[in-house]
Each structure stands twice: as structure tokens, then as C-alpha cells.
Length: 431
Image 1 (cartoon, helix red, strand yellow):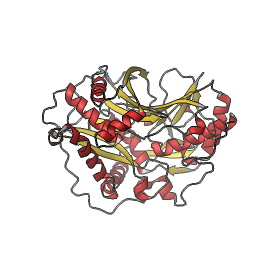
Image 2 (cartoon, rainbow, N blue to C red):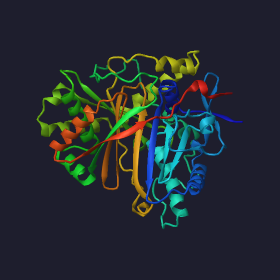
Image 3 (cartoon, helix red, strand yellow):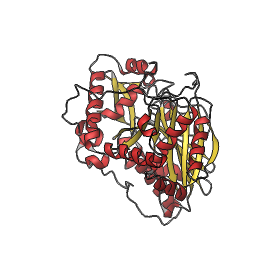
Image 4 (cartoon, one colour):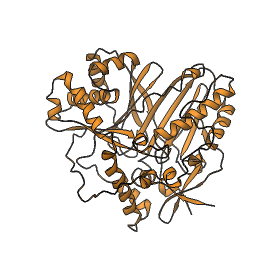
């Protein structure tokens, strides 16, 4: 048995997002054009995993924190319905992910402590490539797939890019945070094991044209729409509305690592921005985004996150003690209100159209705020989906009105309640 440390960013999720009611669960659903061949899916997933040894792991507790050990157990497959599962336990064969199969498709869910979108999408595209091949489709390898275990020769960069690229900067004076607007909704009790979800769908071409007309990008157009919706629904006053947008740091550090190497941009819809003419707000938010897409912005985040995890590990407290501290901590002023993820296209390419009907993505956050958005595109459709710990659809319906004012015709629907899988470090194997 050989143990290897888990990288800084991956480990932080185990510290801060653990707890039986505090999972950070991300789910992809693949709707197929024809009936699922479950045996082919299982063999395709096993072949893909051979090329991603970083994912063939079981998280374990060792010396008070989480490590990884090689996992050779069969991949976890479950029926489409059922109670939430505990990642990293026998319920998922020790893996921090699980497949659920149905007659016309499958879902893949994983704990964010495994990887970010950049890493998991390469794995899923590789799986789809093998599945399409098994169906006799003339598909060719594409960028982002990994057809052999090819990864950076630098072991530290491959497994812990935060430590590899840590910048030598002073963190004596961290940036001052200012209070931001909090959604005044009563969330479900922690014991409630599901999240409510709503969806808006728009034709992608129309959405891109509307963003261009607003002189902004797709991600900032979504952020602007959400911020304006919050301001329309609630009494925001002079408070800022902050949108946390996840961004991959790979292009700024020239690395192809597939473990977590994404961090946050913060877009602020404040009093000054709200005072601009409507046709200037999108460009102003886009300028905020562009100002943060550089190493100068990410360097203190890398250094700060590395120092934070080091301080946890050297504190003498077991990771489970930290986990419970964060899981039960009350929400503090200044917490970012709206997490938004926008990875872009989930369309694997034209050659896969005979195979795939639709690919959608949802994430389930517990205790990190009570509301979040996941936006993505597939083929000719833009999807905007909420995950929230309260029933009210008011924010999404206000976003629908904002998009209608921009000339779009978004279709609103309620999603089935999502029972996200969970991560509880207390339940991991102890070595």
C-alpha cells in the first residue's frame, strides 16, 4: 500500500466542504439518442480511468489529514434513483465519484475535492470516445481527450500545482473585503438532503447575439443578469452584489495538470456600476473580469490557499475537527453571495451527435450560501440552472424577465429535486 499526499486545492475541499450535510457535489447528465448499453459504458469508463491514474484513488485519513491510495476496485455504478451516497466509502467502492445509469442515459457525479471542470471533462470526453467507438461511430481523437496516461513529468506539478506555482509574495496585508448583499431567504434545515433547482433555456445563437449587443462576454452577461435580478427582487440598497466566478488558471501558468487548478474571480455589481446607463453596465463588468485574468490576480490566491492548508495541517487539529468547525460555522458578513460556474460548451463535437441528445451539468452546494448558478451550452442551447436551499423561484424568474428585456425568449422549468451525494471525512478509511 502506497500513500500519496493530496494537493493543496484538492485537500482544502475536504477541510471546508466536508460534513454529512455540506457536500460540494457536481453532476453531469448524458441523455443518449438510443438505449444505454450499460456493459459498454462500464468497459469504456474502465479504459478511460486507466489513462487518468490521478482519479483512480481512494481518499483515506492518515496522520490527521486526507491522503490518497491507489484504488483498483470496480467502478461504482448505481440505479438512477436512490438516497445520497457517501463518497470515498464502500458505497462508492472507495472512489470520490459515482455513475448512475438509466434506460436512456447516465449521470456522473463527483466530489469537487477530486478535480475541477478542466480535469473531469477530459476524463468524460475520453469515456465518450471509447463508448462511441464501441457503437461503431467514426469518431476521431480530439483535443482534451487522453488516450494514454500522459501527464507532466514534474510530479509536484501534476499532483499539487498550487505548491508548484506558489508565488513568493507577502500576505501580511490581505486585500480588505467589503460586505456584500445576502439573499434574505430562509434556507432548508441542514437535515434536508436535497436542493431545489430551476432552469432557463435559450437558443445559443440568440444568447450570444444578446451578449454582444450588451458589449460584454457570455459569463459576464450571465453574471449581470443574475445581479440585476437580485436587485429587482430584494431591497439591496447601497450594498454590493458579488458574483464568484470560477476560472481555470491553466493558460496563465502553461500547465496541463488535471487536478484542481481553478480559483475565483469576484465581479461586483455595486452602487457605482448600477448607476451607469444600462448599455454600459455589461462592458464595465467585463472590464472587471479581464482585470483579474492574469497571474498577478491568481498569485496571492495560490499563496494564500497554500498557507491556509499548511496552517490547518500544522495546527494539531484532525481534519475532521476542522471539517466540523467549518460545517457548523454561521454565515459571516462578506460571504460572496452568488457562486456562478460557466465552463462553456459541453458539446463533445459533431461526430458525437448520433450518440448524444443532450449534456447538462448541475452542482449541489450545502452551507456555502444558499443559492448558486451553473451555466453551460450544448449544441445550440444555453442552459442556466440554479441550485438552492429554498423553494422560491423568484430569482430565476427575475432573470427570465431580464433576458426577455434583452430580446430573448428563455424557457423556464423546475428541475427535479437534486439529492446530491455527500462527503464526510469521518467516514473515510483510516490508515
